[in-house]
Image 1 (cartoon, rainbow, N blue to C red):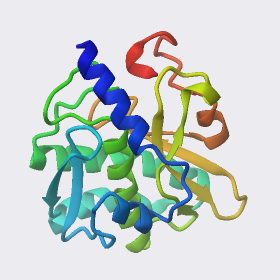
Image 2 (cartoon, rainbow, N blue to C red; image 1 turned 90 degrees about the vertical axis):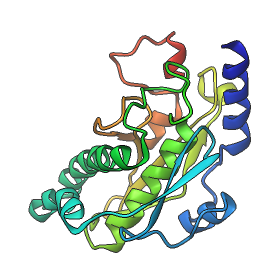
Image 3 (tube, rainbow, N blue to C red; image 1 turned 60 degrees about the horizontal axis):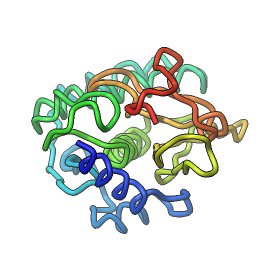
Image 4 (cartoon, rainbow, N blue to C red; image 1 turned 45 degrees about the vertical axis):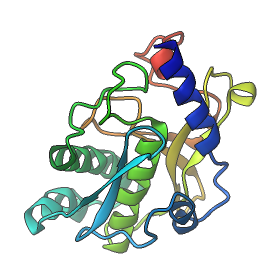
Length: 211
């Protein structure tokens, strides 16, 4: 178990990024396609995006993800709907790829079809790209995955998240699906707060799975 944890730490350290890339540049760096569509997109798993599955969404599946955006009328409402949409993506994609049993964090349930924060942040970024290109994300722009590092931000291990910026205010938010089991709405938190080591308050601060 200690060896696995160390290996995961090294993967995270190697894959973490400061967010200087565009989402497309980041995907290219990870040897993923820069064009991801609901008719054919990639899903990372296996820690550090070591394994990749191709996924197709049916019209019915896409409509179930998109439905809630039709009534969104504010940036705050859009963030709430994005959090729900990430959960819907995870439920649908999990059933297709065998990753439905993925647990919160990285070390709680080491398994071939689990995700670390690199997998989670890449997948969430791809989901956000699809929402944006289909006209569903109107109040926010998006970024490549960004990292926080232990020496600077008060946590034991490096951690990475997807993120968005509210267009009108310029306020940036982390969109982090790593803290919860597969299919739970993503946490959307002010990026500066996330950067300082934020994690959901119900999780113990000394829990290794929430570092």
